[in-house]
Amino acid sequence: MLEFRNLKDIDWKAYQEIDMESFENDNVKKEDFSRWLDSDGLIGAFVDSKLVGYLMLRYMEDYGHLARIAVGKSERGKGFGFSLMNYAETYYKDRKIARIGLYVETRNEVAISLYKKSGYCIMFESWHYRFEEDIVRSIEEEIILSDSTNMRVLTISDYETVVSTFPTINKEELKDHLSVEITEEYEGSIPLGLFIEGNLEVYGRFSSSFSGCRPFLCTETIHVKEFVANLKPFRKKDYFRITFDRDKRLAEFCENNGYRLWHHLYFMEKKI
Image 1 (cartoon, one colour):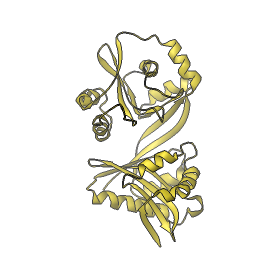
Image 2 (cartoon, one colour; image 1 turned 180 degrees about the horizontal axis):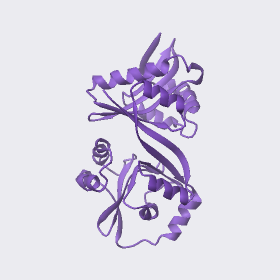
Image 3 (cartoon, helix red, strand yellow; image 1 turned 60 degrees about the horizontal axis):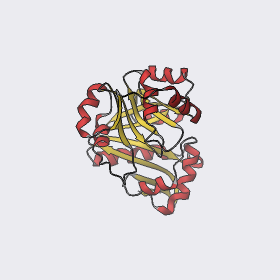
Image 4 (cartoon, one colour; image 1 turned 90 degrees about the horizontal axis):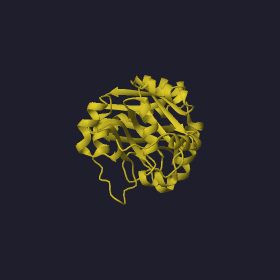
C-alpha cells in the first residue's frame, strides 16, 4: 500500500539515491535537504517502508509550485507518478490554491506526457545557462565599472518598479522574494537590481551558494555583462548561472557568447 509522509533525516540516503537517478546535473546537497525538512512540503511516498518517490511542494498566495518530483528508477511504470501528482493536487486544494506550476526538461517526453495526462499545459520555455570561471573573469576584465551604474539589494518598496519594468514576472514569487529581511546572518537568496542612470535594467534573485540568479530578467542583453561585473562583491564562487523564462533573445545572446546551456525547460501549469 502506498503511503505518504513528511521526509525525515533518516530518509536522506534513500532520497539521495532517487535524486541522483532523476536529476543528473542538479543534485541536492545534504545541508539543503536538512534545511527543507523544516517545511511541510517535502513529502515521501513509501511502499512497505521503502521510499519510492517524493515531492517538494511550495506555495505563495494562490499559486502552488511543484519544485521537485521524482520516482525511483526501479519503481517507474507502476503508477506512482500519477499518485504523487494526485497527492500534490489534494495538498494544494486543502490550502485553497488556484494554480499549480512546474518546470520539466524539454527532452523528458515521459514526464511531459505524465503531466499532460494530469491536466497540465505547456505555457512557455525556460533556460538555465552557466558562465564558467574563465568567462566570468573575462567579463570582469572587459567591463569598466561606471559611476552611473548601481547594484543594490531590493525591498518590497521596489515592487512596483520591478513589475512595471518586467510585467511578465511571477508576481506572487516576487512579493515573497522582496519581503525577506536581509540581515548580516541571512544566508538565503537576495533580490538584486542593476540600475543604470537611475533606471532598473536587470533584476536577479541571487543565491551565493547556488552562485546564480533565478529569476533573471533584463531590459536589453547588453546589460547582462554589466550585471555579472557588478555582482563580484556578492559572489562567493567563480562561476555564475542564470535562469530565465520566455526570453529567446537572451537565450540567443547566451549561445552566441558561448555560455553553457545547463537546462532547457518547459513551464507547465494547471488550474484547480
